[in-house]
Structure formats: structure tokens, C-alpha cells
Length: 264
Image (cartoon, rainbow, N blue to C red; front, side, top):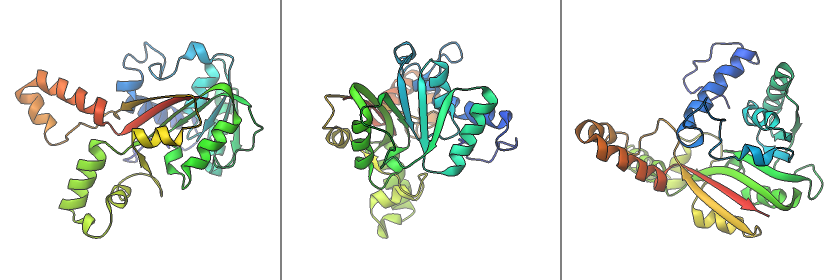
């Protein structure tokens, strides 16, 4: 997961420059909701209390290129990160060795975690568990390996989003006539990353997390995606103050990312 949608990273895969460029793309994409003042504030400081995690044992599900695990390690956690693919695990391990990052990498399936019960203080996962055929099995495993009072934080795709209904339903579904061949969920899958990419509502997330004592959800919008790609530029030019408030309201209610924090 390099966030290199256009093939612009020219550095050799696995080199420090490769990881640096991959990080820059991820950090910039998540700046609006994760760390608006970065680099003057810690990356993802609006989602993670970095002082609170210090000293905790943390599991990350889905290591990607190792960015988040590196941040957790630097914050003073004992971090273990897993991934289903050998390539991601190898690249993340290579990154940790190069940067002298103290993090463990395990190739594993999130639906069957190879850890004892009540092992971790926190589980973190960014844009991963919705790509599982059985997301509910991952959540059951997370509950099992979390200590009592442990925290589970994750981002999944939001069904009640502009992207799902307008871009998926109207642009791809009606204008490109895909809805004549498949349902809306499959239409969204045709232009979304991953072989599987479930989208969830708030109610569905609360139902999936019913074994947890407290669940809080926030809707986030990925950077670079205007609420209405064709309308927003016109509004910003004609009535910029209204357009700014309009985009903020849409993003806060109908953004594509649904971020939750659940306490066991």
C-alpha cells in the first residue's frame, strides 16, 4: 500500500527513498483529519493519543509499508504488526531494519490471529478489515486478544458516503450503466481497491462490535476528494465562504472513511 496511484514513485522498491515517498503520499492524503498542522504535530495525532499509547503492547492488523507501526514504535509501544501477504511483511521488515525501528512483523491471517487471549492493550487497523471476506471473524479475534479495557481502533469504508451513492450510484451505476448488470455494492467494487471492499454504516459497525462495552464512530473524508467533484469548484469560485462550509458539512456527515474506537 504505497498510495502511488499514478506510478510516480521512481525509487527502487525497498530503499529508504521508496519508503519516504510512500509515507509522504499517505501523510498528505490523511492530513485534513489526521494531522492538519503536520509536521508541527505528530502524524495522526487527531486520531491517536500518542502519550496514552506509550508503554502499551499494540497489535496492528495490516502492516502495509510499515508507516503506522513505525509511528507506534517511536511513541514507545511494543508493536507487533501482521499482514496476510509475504511481500508486505518483507518490505515492512526491511524498513524496520533500515530505520532501526523496534517492531515485530508476523505473516498471518487476521481471521485467525496467532496470539494468546488477552495479549494486547490496543489493536489498530487502517483500511484493512473491510477487505476480509469475514470481517466479523477479525473482530471476534480482536476481542479475544485484547485485554479487558483494551482499545480497538480501525477505519473502514463508509456506506452512507457521497462516494458510495453519488459517484458509485450515479456516475458509475447509471451514467456508465453498470447498475443494469450488477447491484450497487458490486458497482462500487469495480472502482474500489481490493478484491473485496465492504462498506459499512454506523449501525452495522455498532452491531459488529456488540461485544465491546463502548463504541464511538467518526466520519472522515480522504484528502483530495471534494464532496461533489463537479460542483465544488464552481461553488468555491462563486461563493467561496459557503462552499467551504458546505464541503466541511458534507465531509463530516458523508465522508468515505468511518473510523471507530471500541473499548473491550
